[in-house]
Length: 369
Ligand SMILES: [Zn+2]
Image (cartoon, rainbow, N blue to C red):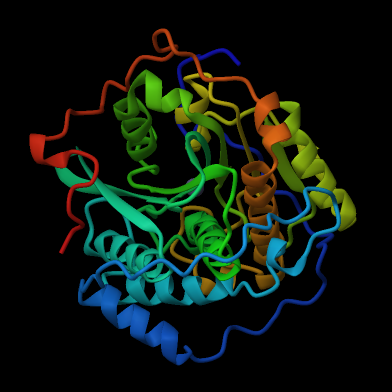
């Protein structure tokens, strides 16, 4: 699509769509935190980062079938995405009510995600950048198996707006992608492609700062290795009547169509959005796609809390993310059909607000302590 200037995000998004919920009853709010969650939360809040654990021992390389019948490890059966939202809510509560760029709540969010990933055996890089006078971080994690020249990437922004804790926007996408990491670790997946997951900082700024910084810093060769980027932003809204899906290539479109049709969930195809992180990758010709349950009445407000997310909606999104990751990373045929990113030149200038990072901000820099 044309790399037009990105409109301001508050210049009128899709209007909130009224009732007729897919899921009739709202679930009661969540029970008390389980022990592992409390431990993880404590680690995040005090900024203690557990060093990398040894990756799980390899199992026999038996990638799940690529067809529609999904083996257990291919589904979100063991996933507990609400666990992460409880932690993010507590982080916001403990840090002035938000997890915005430049805030201690954002730092604690980075620490939490990094800790969960390292414990699961992912290789984690915390990438530092500077925006609006404050340090920000992207968390990028690689599963240390699969062809590093064929990268399948999924991502979500990790920051909230200053007005609230950002549990649907975008704790929900954060949790869905984190559950992909845990599903891959549980299955000891040995995919054909390299799986990479990203959690972006300062998305709520004007220019998708964190993801734009990451994509730009990669350079042409490493960008061309990314065969697909899938984005998850606002995927837990209550009263979701249908899912908005987008894609730049039919291989990705078929993933969404198959997944939602099998669950009798209506979808609507939307244009590739300018106001979420997939734009930062699509601008370079990388095949992108994504799903969203859309904005809700608490969009960018203080009430975007834990109670603002429907666990059943979030579970649908988590399943879509897990399935897409499995399919693309294990099916060489699907990967081969995806076009390469543009290697010559960029199609979109770097955002004017993006400042160069200081030299110590190279990818792989140490996480915030
Ligand atoms: Zn968002």
